[in-house]
Length: 156
Image (cartoon, rainbow, N blue to C red; front, side, top):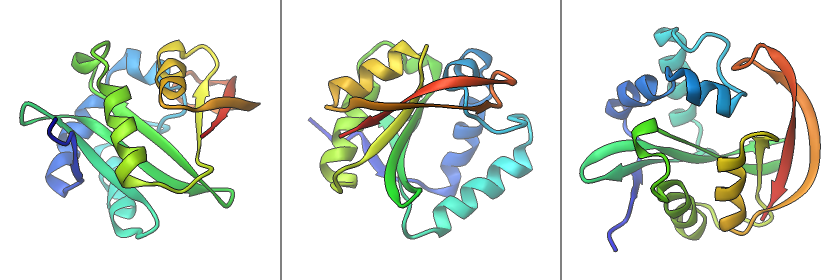
């Protein structure tokens, strides 16, 4: 099977921006930008990501189309993983395949953590299929919902 992942380029950011405008995706992800329609802030955020050597980011590519991204970053002294798929790629096992590949080749540091809104069953299922287990919970303000919500902390 061909690799789903390649390094992120600045050319990918336009598609990433379009993906994160989806209202249903924003609600599911919950912890999003304050204003997802602010293209300037989005591009500046990604330029900081791409400039930071400690952040590992990959573009998910399917049939020569950008499907989303997966990355790891440092949070409270521990690596965390996150991902985002365009809605047209949901429900096809792609998130699980891409995250599995990322964990095998992109970031092999263990333990590695992830977070998901408690009601984001699809993301929790992806993380569990990749070997993550729930190890804690927290509450935080979710811009995507305009409210404080509960989230699971998972570890691999």
